[in-house]
Amino acid sequence: MLQDRAKYSIAGILVAAFLGYSCFLYADLPPGNKQPLPSADKGKLLWQQYNCGACHQVYGLGGYLGPDLTNSYSKRGPAYIRAFLQNGTNIMPNYHLTETEINELMNYLRHLDASGNSDPRTFTIQRNGFINQ
Image (cartoon, rainbow, N blue to C red):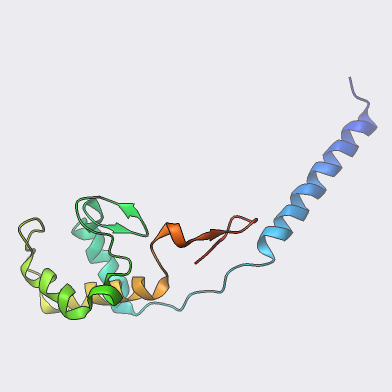
């Protein structure tokens, strides 16, 4: 068995290593994102209410029936997205959204688009586990 002094030394080393690594991780946090518009928050709630994530992805997470919508606002444009939300397609159902709901969902997609890129092949993983885009 280890002596008490050796046990305390090992515990001290482990605590110091934990604190040192924690300081290393949290010393260089990414900058905070801008707060979304309140209508973007409502759009996220609509996204969840209509279970859009069952078919669509955001940042590569979600269903595979529809496309990843993280950067759809800048790639396709608001008119293209609005047409899908108003009418649906043969795969995407028409939810008969009100004009307010369409605007809130579009604000949510615009906020997602401004928050980063969704293609993980372009990510660079840092030593501390954070990702650069």
